[in-house]
Image (cartoon, rainbow, N blue to C red; front, side):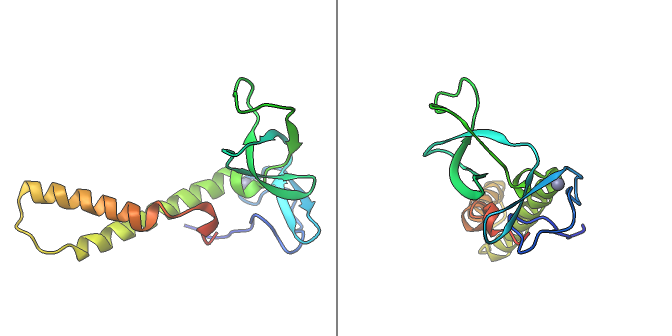
Length: 153
Ligand SMILES: [Zn+2]
């Protein structure tokens, strides 16, 4: 796999490309006064909501707890506003890479858990029990803790 993370949530400088080097989607570079944010060219409608889990660039600032506006969603009260999404979150290539990274991490953790299991007599019940423990341990120790912000790319 090729690791060339040319698109981050924010960049120190405006890069000289106007479309995503991974998926070729056109980019809109927004300067927040400190950093350059590569965003999808097309804006999206959103509302603020406590259950919102999306970060959006509204009036040149990143704001959290946004909910993408969907007609019929009861949480979308009030007038929706336009904002931009950082391409980091929407790029299909980067998303696939992150999913692959999480999968590899998960499998790595599962391997370690297998090695750490105490020796037990091999019976079918023990094997199923051990597999269950491995999955739970892996979920508790790593895979579930991984969030987008923790990933190195
Ligand atoms: Zn892309």
